[in-house]
Image (cartoon, rainbow, N blue to C red; front, side, top):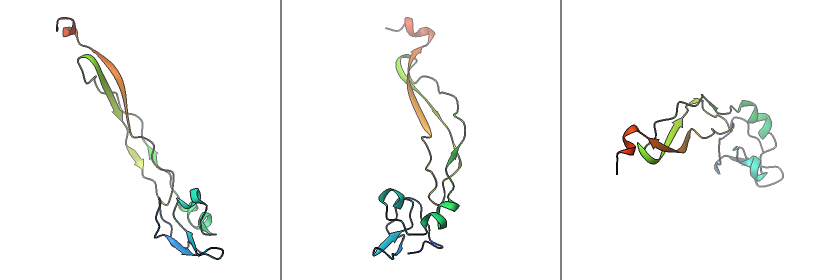
Length: 109
């Protein structure tokens, strides 16, 4: 089977061709995990693959709670989206715990 002019990202059951050894072979990037790629998958599809690229992490936000336990968050943006079965994007958001220590916390009861 041939993937020529037909390469699909992710898992796509509609992205198949008639195989020479098996009834169907696939041209989606998931075929690498399942082992049922068409014979020319790597030559036809992986060459054009572009992995995701992301920017730097932004600053942490303020603690969600001025007094006591809360959380902070930060994010980053996708600069180049994945194409043609390239590596997917990593996490774009992070969250961590924090302890709010506003000066008025000691007076609050």
